[in-house]
Amino acid sequence: MTDSTRAGALATLGGVDVPALAAREGTPLYLYDAAAIDARIAALKAGLAGRRARVCYAVKANSSRAILARIAAAGLGADIVSEGEMRRALAAGFRPEDIVFSGVGKTRTEIQAALEHGVGRFNAESIEELDLLDALAAARGVSAAVALRVNPDVDARTHAKISTGKAENKFGIALDQARAIFRDAARWTALRIDGLHAHIGSQLLTLDPIREAVARMAAFGRELQGAGTVLRSIDVGGGLGVCYRAGHDHPPALEDYLAAVFGAFEGFDGELVFEPGRWLMAEAGILLARVVRVKRGDTRRFLVLDAAMNDLIRPSLYEAWHDIVPLVPANRPLREYDVVGPVCETGDTFAQGRVLPEVEADELVAICGAGAYGMSMASTYNSRQLPAEVLLERGGYYLIRRRQSWEEMTAGESLLQERRTT
Ligand SMILES: *Cc1c(COP(=O)(O)O)cnc(C)c1O
Image 1: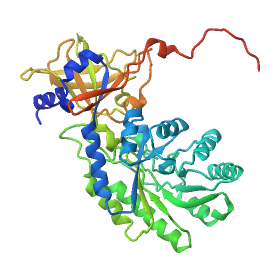
Image 2: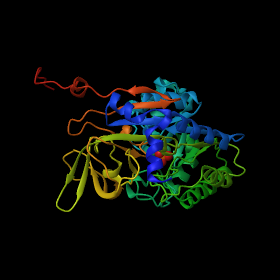
Image 3: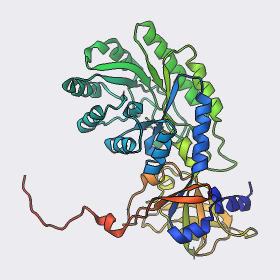
Image 4: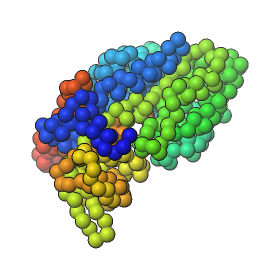
């Protein structure tokens, strides 16, 4: 697709007049294309048809209420990493038994809340967590289903900050220790430790690390079963990559990814669990921004947007590339820009030296691939309002989150009203 046809497609995303939408709802604005989300859900379902498998959407990728409700209504489960995500997931209609609880730092309060609501499975990451979970489940008189998150010590070959499956990462349990836990599983009387879990990292653009990880998990699973352990589920995590840079990123096809996983677990009679986040949402969303001004510096030309790192932090945090498409008429000459936000940080840069069709102040640009880890990572840094979100569907749109008001931004803060002592 050429830049101008892409700009044309984005200007009518979801059959909606996007410039008119921007004029009405303001910018920065997150737009999600419902058809694109539905298409990914449908592809996953088709790929898993006839298999003993379930999908638990990684809520942290995009936890907006209407998005979660749509995914829940499609029959998927949820992968959560905090009590807040649990509350969002339950409110959005996920059944508690379809929720898996991951994370290296589940607190006592969070575990108690999850037990109280009947969350389906805990992906446990340490012996210390097993001890606490066991005590809390016993105190409630319930039995908790547990999968051990193992650390397969595989290099995901992705950005270091989103790589989670190497021995030096904080995540998971080394296989030796996991082996000992399964051997002594009877020790935790209120737990049913009958699952394996791994998640080696995110935005994986090749299948090799996945293949290595599932091969190690499968071998370990067979070993455990050989020693008499009952394995009801094997959860392979998320991580499937997406295309952030057209013509450059070539993520594995879903079918190939699924074939690699199914191939490794041939003959396994339990349930396979998938936890995609990014893959379901990233390419369905854009962050729409307006150009505040074009600043011509000594050596560089800066495109200063009204969106910033507080709205979309991936470029600052991971040096992530996002395609940027100005919604301008075709035939503009090309120029090189540093695309930046207004926040007082040099890191508030969406792109450096990006060649784009010439853009003027007040024109719109779409930052693509913003449907995952965009809004869910947004903050109010520099006291900027959280952006609004819309879901585009069949030529219309739903405002699924209004722009944060000034009152909301400072709600909960107070002056020195009441002095307390401990
Ligand atoms: C973040 C996360 C996921 C989702 O990862 P994606 O790369 O977005 O698919 C899945 N499982 C766990 C445990 C995670 O922490």
